[in-house]
Image 1 (cartoon, rainbow, N blue to C red):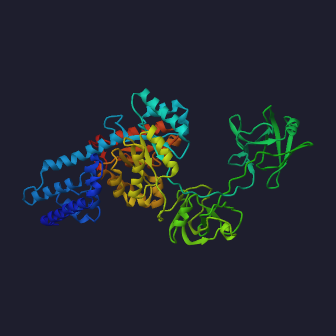
Image 2: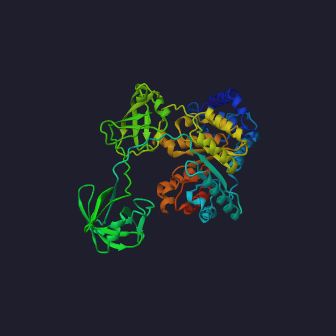
Image 3: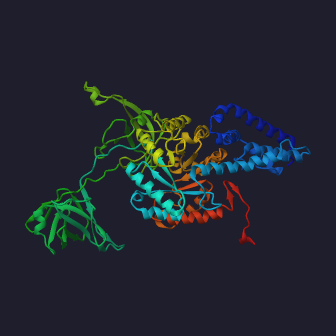
Length: 619
């Protein structure tokens, strides 16, 4: 196919003019960024302009001419277009319009700027040529286990992550002290990033079930008992540390309950204990061991032991104590209905009819509209709003003072089958939530982070106004040198990514975290095939470092063996400037795998650009 070179040059000229026009339009936001981010902010606007229309026709024509496909234009959009213009002009027998040296400098300089911003936020590389840093989420044990932290540092951890949704300032401070000490011992500085929890929307309380605990046997595939059920009985004057699974025998956990002192004194090894369990089943246990601390009894059948059940041994009897209530859960099926309410109520699954459950953030319920999605427990249960209604509070109806204005949203379950417990997460991907990005708890945690850590990672960012609010808190704390990471985990954050980046680039030490777990719940898994790549490209255009998290080598961290899919995922994650690993007993091995794969991938790719290194296997 013959390509009209003049038409291609005209299309490039029009696109370059469009870049200039949009630069003027966005110039107040570009100019407001930190001086080190000015070039990246301008290029971000250029990339946003490039992707605002379908460019596939121009791509195909440029490829036919052997010029470029513009598919790796993110680092320096204008320079790539100018280079393409020069090539097409030369093919058309004309002199290049743009200075080739300036174009080359702009393209090479973009990668250098990104590396500078990465080092400013995340710290220097541990190994030369290792482009991705490794961040590890610290477990609570890191507060008192110095050797654990030292092993992580020695394995190659470059940044430590603390989740402010757990523990508190005292534990956080101990973790940080151990990280600093381990880094000093290893001869390098380990930076600490702390995640602010943000406003969490969760299901409310569910009424507890009956106080029953299952004392179970273990059977083989043929149904033969290979381990009896075990009951550890403790005299009531002693404390039960953790009912109902406090005691162990020969390293195996057993159920523990309280019995009366009188009953305990009558028991001897070999004696038989009789009980009628919660199902009316008659069961027997034989005493196999007696110590000052308690008596161990074993049986050959499962027992559902309820609080107050009578244990009988000879003429002696006692009532079972210290059995906690069971945790009840809703079991909505596809097609069922459930009511989400802004009132502070306790859901009773046994009440019959359509269950009503509260929400920890009443404002979220009041913002729901008919047709919007409601996702529970990381998307395990999906629903849509079919009706919203205002319900007068009982206090108001009785003539006493009450807050009034309770709102109920009736939901139709569109994906059910899973169990729904109390205080499980709720995602509202279609709803505009009137909530601040920083809660009172977040602001208190941010003050701690500014004093003790290196980076604050902020959750629940949706708009540039959310970012402006965070930066104002930074200014109030005098935290100009504190790193800022914005977590992209909601649909509004993805849709507003460019203006959010421009606002964040007002802060010198700035980066982005792609929180793939929450984002996948909101977007749906089908879109997660393309969205991470789009975020990666937009953030690269801004010359801002990206952290990729959620389930990176999760099976490896937990079991010591990665899945094939995880290795493929790592190849994509290594395009980011930092990879976040979660907790697990095999994190050092996971770090080792990342290092090994990273060394190979660094020879094969630079961001989304393939590097044509020598493949020895094909020679």
